[in-house]
Image 1 (cartoon, rainbow over the protein chains, first blue to last red):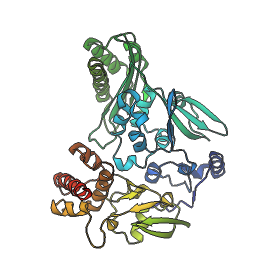
Image 2 (image 1 turned 180 degrees about the vertical axis):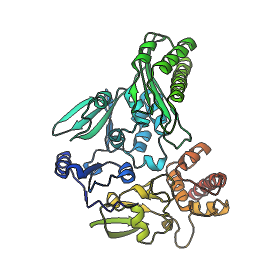
Image 3 (image 1 turned 90 degrees about the vertical axis):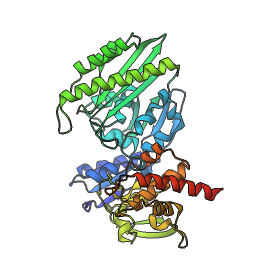
Image 4 (image 1 turned 90 degrees about the horizontal axis):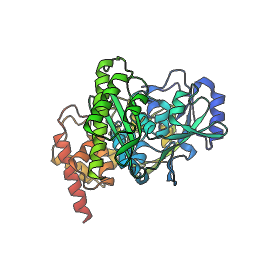
Length: 284
Length: 157
């Protein structure tokens, strides 16, 4: 595969410099994180690559409220991180193990994953339900919710994603992730993620998201409303899974039909909630 | 062209590379033919190398990205004509049929065993999940990794 159209590979040392290089490069310039996605799918009109891995943004640090992950930390670095492992029973590592192969995860970065925003991404639905925030640099740094970012039209225009924040979890916080794919290594036909906060046996907060519907992952507000205030009984789980199946917006593509995807959402929500219910019973 | 420095199999070398060139293209051009060209999209694992301690598919790593880094290819596994325990294990277990996937499998095994000296069958499967073999059913590779782990831990004792 020839990427011979690339005439410049630039390695800025500060976000300011990277931003200037992008602005100067216009449409022919593109940022590179781990590079795996760019090297595979480089559009023919891109002639300048700007590597963000030289910005020194790959640290993972834990503060009182959140774990701050630098945008160029690789998916495997996130998977293996001890602070990240403490979030909701290790759900982040469990999800990451289902993303491609270890070879890909040693290159793919968390920032690149969020910016590429593939509709089948396993990372995005889970980070949506964990209420992750991101920091963007566009001359100034600003922080916003990941969901708000995807809902906005501008997304990443003229800015650099510098870090991702995942809130630390405490007692009563549970999350689960389920991916459906033809093989363990394939991208998702559909995936779903769930977070609940349980107090005195009831879900005081519930967040769901589904991805690969086949659109980009979004939260499922009707499903969340159906679970809030409820205990995780078998009956409730069945009813909530049915709400998910009946309200999720799906469509056909070459991988699966919209109707099949609705059934997968049903099965995925059910499986996430049963997993959490089992943990609750086990007192974990 | 961009000048980069790489330490490949213990030898520090300088190269002039094209900005869009991949590590796979550079390594094969420079004679590291154990690095196989397969899918060129990061799916098959035939081009797996160790870059700065971790296994990656070199077909989707820009060569410039590796500047200043350390690379290990299957050529660098043997030491003074003596095969590496991973290579010995692949030979002994007959984990080779056509051989095209073998160097990549060995490098993925190298990454696994350097971080996890005694992997479970599931961990071995996960570690090799990015390396496709079209000849076999992976059973012998699984055995080879287990044997390699035993050889390496035996050496360490």
